[in-house]
Length: 247
Length: 255
View (cartoon, rainbow over the protein chains, first blue to last red):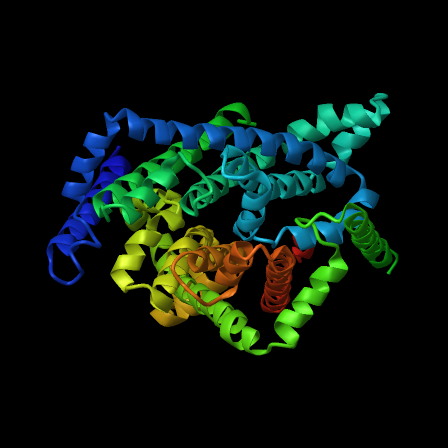
C-alpha cells in the first residue's frame, strides 16, 4: 500500500513539474499546455461521442491485429522451433525481414491496401509478429529434454509432444512475447493513423487537432489516452500471465 | 558450413522466385529484384549526393539519438535500480511514460524544438530510452548479494562500486535493452523523417511514393532492412566481446 501511495506521489510530482513548466515562460505556452488545461479538455472529450468513436476504432483495430499476429506467429514459432532444418533454412530470410521497420512499409501499404483499416492492421500485425515468433522459438529451445523423452517413452507422437508438452511449457514465454507485441502494435497503429493511413482513430484525432486548429491541449489529451491504453494492455496481459501460468 | 549453405540457398531461391514472378506479373507495385538493385545503383552510386545528403544524416541522427538515450537510460537506470524507494516513487510514472506511443508526441516536439534535427533527436530519444532504462533497473537490482556485502565490507569507493560491481553485473541485461532500442531507433528515425523534413531516408521514401516511383520505394525499404541487419550484427559483435567474461555464452539466444 505504501508503494502505491509513493507511485501516486511520483505521478503527482511529475504533473506539478509539467504544470510549472507549462505556466512558466521557459517554453512556448502553445507547445506545452499545462496538465490542468489538458485534463479539462480530456474530461470534455471523454463524453464526446466523436472522440469515443476514434478511441474505439483504434482499440478494435489493435485487438484484431494482436489476434491475427498470435494466429500467425505461434504456429510458425512452433514449426521453426521444433524442426531445426526449417529453422536454419529460413534463418537468412527471417533475419532480413525482421529489421525492416514496419513504418518503412507505410508508403507501400498505402499504395496497395489504400486508406482503410486494412493498412494499419496489416502493418501492426507485421510489427507484432516478431516478438511472439522469437519468444516461441526461444521457449522451445529451453524445453526440458527429459520431459520430451518421457512423453516419447509413453508413446506420445511428435505432434502430441508439440501440443501436450512443448506448448504448455512455452506458454509463459509466449505470453511475454504477446505483451511486448501488444505495446509495439499500439505504437505502429497510432503512427500509421498519424501518417494519414486512416480516416478514423486516435492517431487521426491527434493529427487533426494539430494540423487544423493547432489545439495542443487536444493533442496531449489524445496522447494521454494512448498512454492509458498502453498501460491497461500491458498490465492486463501481465495479470493474465501471472494468473494462468502460475507454475 | 552445411547450415550456412542451406540458409543462403533458400534465401537465393526466394530471390530468384521473386525475380521470375516479377517478370511474369509485371506489376508496378512489385518490381523484380533486378530492377530494385538497378534503381538503388542509379540512385545512390551514380548520384552520391543522395548518400551524403540523405542517408548519412539519417544514420547520424539515429546513432546520436540512440547514444543519448543509452547514456540517460543506463545512468538513470543504475541509480533507480539500487534504490527500492526511488523505484516505488518512479515506477508507475515510468510505466505510463513508456506506454505513450512516441509518434503521438511528434506534434509537441515539433512546436518545442521548431522542427529540424533537435526535434528528430527528441523523438528518437523519448522513444528508445525506455527499454534501456527498464533493463538497467532490472540489471542493477540483480547484483549478487554476496558481491554487495563483500564490497560493503571492503568499503570500496563509490565510483568503483558503481563502475566495477554494479555495471558489470547489470551488463547482460543492459545489452539486451540496447539491442531492442537500436532497432526501435531505426523505426523512430523513419517516423520522425516522414513528417516535416525534406532530408533523410524516410522523406525520400515518402517522395518516391508521391512520385509513384515504386522501384525506388522498394530500394529504400531494402536499404532500411540492410541497415537494420548491419546495425544489429555490429552490436552483437560488440556484445560478444564485452560479455566474453560471462560464464554462459548466450549467443545461441540471438540466433
